[in-house]
Image (cartoon, rainbow, N blue to C red; front, top):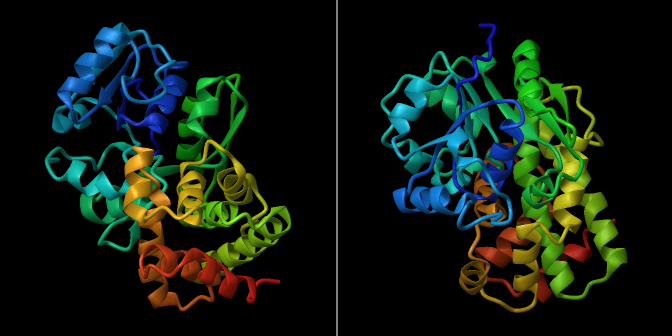
Length: 333
């Protein structure tokens, strides 16, 4: 079905990326609907004119936002639904959903795998909610919320099997500081966005161990090759992993100080336990969950993925980072 944007756009999620996306969308839409699970957070947002927990320096005209904690009403009354909740919580948010999404345009900005399902978020919407595949899109590319908040130039790729629908979604996200392109490789973009978080944790661990820039460069080069092997195995397609949706997202997540996955990995490399690092960050490092999901998924494909295996062994098998990274370093070229 050819989707036509009507102006009824809803955002689901209350984190930093959801907040940045709301800012982007409001360049085009006079009013938006914003679903947040917590009513107290909504009331604080209305009173303060900014998200009370994330990107607090970014102010909004709250008269242009219809806040709601009723997911069914939000789905029922809007046509473009942008989901930006952390992947570990997506099933919990959707548990109360009864409204039909079959005729909606679903846009996922979630960079993770649906836990216990072993599937991408786009596939989850297709299988569980009967949304036609041509009406599901994803957002990929290097895009830190903190830089969007500062109007720094950002490049996004909209993945959708229907290119015309991808262009409709791309128009919603294009403005003076956001450039967009479109792609049919929705699953490749989604899987790469999960893997780049895993590799960012690896980069952070190595940074915490003071491995140095030379080793980091080799780690990045091997991460690109590992990502390419997995994407080829799971979804063979004529893609170029050097494109910004893949390599660009990988680089910014592995190197940037805005990367929560890199920060999380650095803490692990410095000797923090997983639990302590998570508590101190007070933010979700999706790569932690993505590591387990990708490890389980790779049992089906049997791709050679030494970096994924090393991160899994450190986070879930409690192997000392110095020991595991030494073993990994002997496999890299």
